[in-house]
Image 1 (cartoon, rainbow, N blue to C red):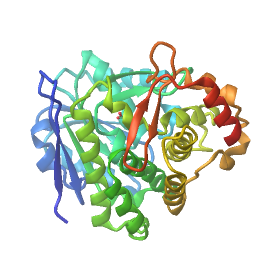
Image 2: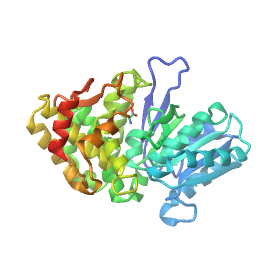
Image 3: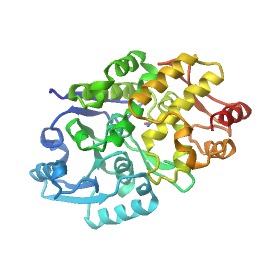
Image 4: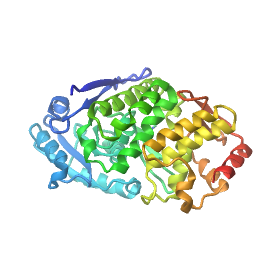
Amino acid sequence: MKSKILNVSFNEDFSKKSYNIHIGTDLILNPKPILREFIEKRKIIIIHDSYFSLQDNKNKYLYKFVESIKEYSSNVYLLSIPGGDKTKDIFHLNKLIENILSFEIDRESLIIAFGGGVVGDIAGFVSAIILRGINFVQVPTTLLSQVDSSIGGKTGINSKIGKNLIGAFHQPLAVISDMNVLKSLPKREFHAGLAEVIKYGLIKDISFFEWLEKEYKDILTLHQLKLQNIVTKSCEIKAEIIKNDEKEKGERALLNLGHTFAHAIEYFGNHDGRIIHGEAVSIGICLALKFSYFLGFCREEDLKRVANLFEKFNLPTSFNNFKNLSLSSAKLIERFKFDKKNKQNQLTFILNKGIGKSFIHNNVNINDLTQFLDKEI
Ligand code: GLY
């Protein structure tokens, strides 16, 4: 399978930080052609998910990757962190920083994030702040991180108050997305990633949404070419949106479809694994569509079609699946107030005028929202 290369660039960018996303197979086993120019004679710190270990045969990926990097740099250091949102906190951040500084790095050193979204977010954030910023490369190993979190430069950690509230925009030098590594992923993680994939169709591409409806069986069996198409298409849509709005002053907020609900659900789930990010996004998107219908923006048949596709990918579509979170409309609305999209104390939601037509809805009426949530919970 031939690799695809997609360029990410920004219209209003004076530092010209454009970079490539490489999407193919066996890229992790042989990353030299992509990484050579960035790693030669530098100190390399690989921050990897502890799911991957050098000894573990099932995860030969990390071992081969490291061996390949060592051909060009004699100073390669590995640090592992557990995946899962609980790791994305100030404690783990501090530990990483102290460890990395002990390697006597300089501003030419390079961090490589090897893992899912949590590893990419925290490793990216360390890169943004250590020595006031050094370069990093993303090697996303989950579908969710390949289609979303590894691109666009959002890095950060959670605060006790809410998700992703501490962070920086810091673009990587390159992104390497290998379809093979997805085979090593637990099924639940793979399905969760598909929630973010469906999101792109819903935001701006009905034909991609229809393709997902048509191809779902092959996708579930990890058909490599179709996975490559999924990752490429998702990254194309994301790159097109962020090109004009790197720092989320406007259109980039569309990528947050379903996330206001999702972040609140994750908060009440206490990030303890009962519900993982993509599952919360799946419920969140279905709620966003239902809220759009409630406010008269879209048709009932759109809701049914969207829920149907999530269900085909074994994803939850309503609060029913998570009754044990003991939610209430008042508790949820309290959480929504911490969302970064809000302006001047008014709630902002991303809603839909149909499949492929998301829009930013500012100043959401609290009474409407309460009535809607009371009906759903
Ligand atoms: N994950 C949403 C964004 O990158 O803007």
